[in-house]
Length: 131
Image (cartoon, rainbow, N blue to C red; front, side):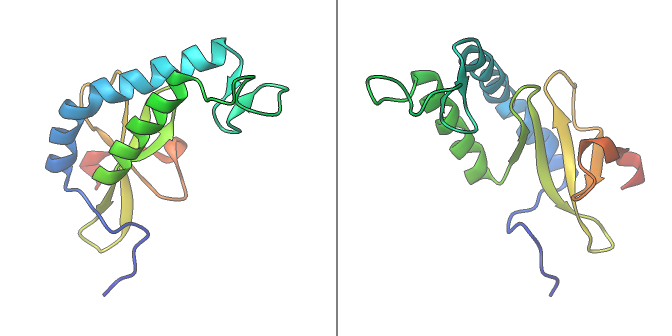
């Protein structure tokens, strides 16, 4: 049996159906990230830019709490978040040749139309007709 990076894999149809149910969550992530950026909060370091902690009250902003909640929800479904700013997510997929790849979707796209090799990332996107 092949060793894969991910335990859960989606068919193209499964991933396309999943997008319709989670696109509102991805849109919310983008909105939350933008609000946090506007407040000067670095979501990757979990602190305000130039600061040493979440804030003077020792609490994280509610927007970060909600963002983390959504991220965990998507992770439990097997979805990989790749870009908070643009709403970029990947669905692990196994090609007919046994190769693990990502089905790639970005907020604003009507459906999943692209895939890429895992190390290639977004710049390596190819049309799903080439799967």
